[in-house]
Image (cartoon, rainbow, N blue to C red; front, top):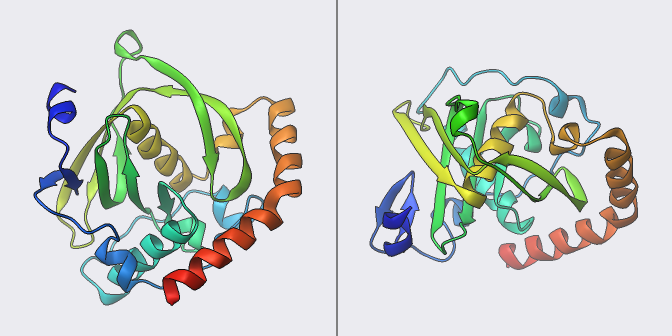
Length: 215
C-alpha cells in the first residue's frame, strides 16, 4: 500500500490519471434509474454473464449506473440494483488513503485468498438497495477481482480496505447476495425494521439530488 499512500492520483479502471473531473464523465452522460429494493426477485438470484460487449446499450447502462450511484450517494452499484439482470458493476469511491477509484467491471471473479493469508476487518456496511441501515460486516481487507471492461478487454482490479469491501459487496450482488445475508437473523430483522422507518427520508434525499443533477 506504500505506493497508493504516496500517489494520490485518481485511479480510472485501476490506472492512475493526472487529472479527472469531480463529476465522472459517465455520471454527466447518464440518466438516473430506479434502485431496486430488498425483496425484489432480481436482487436474489445470480445474474447472467455479459456476452455482448461494445454495444451502445451496454455503454448507456454503465453511464446510467454512474448517474444513479451519484444521486444515491453510493460507493458502487450493481446492474441488478437498477433492475438489469447482468453481471456488471460500477464504482466511484475514495479509499482509506484518500485515493479516488472510478470504474466498471463485467463478469467479475474474485481471487480466493487462503485462510492463512486472510485478514478480516469488521466495519459498518450499508447498501443502496437496503435504504437507511448500516451494520457491521466482516470482510477481507484486500481483494483482487478479474473481469472485463465494456469493450470486452480483460481487467484486473486490486482493492484494499474500504475499496476492497466495495468490490466484494458488488460482486456479492451479482451472485444474488446482499450484506443482510451475512448477518444473524436478529440483526437482519433489526436492519429491515430500520429500513422501513427511514426509506422515505432516503428516497426524498435521492430525489433532491437527482433534481440538482438534472438542473
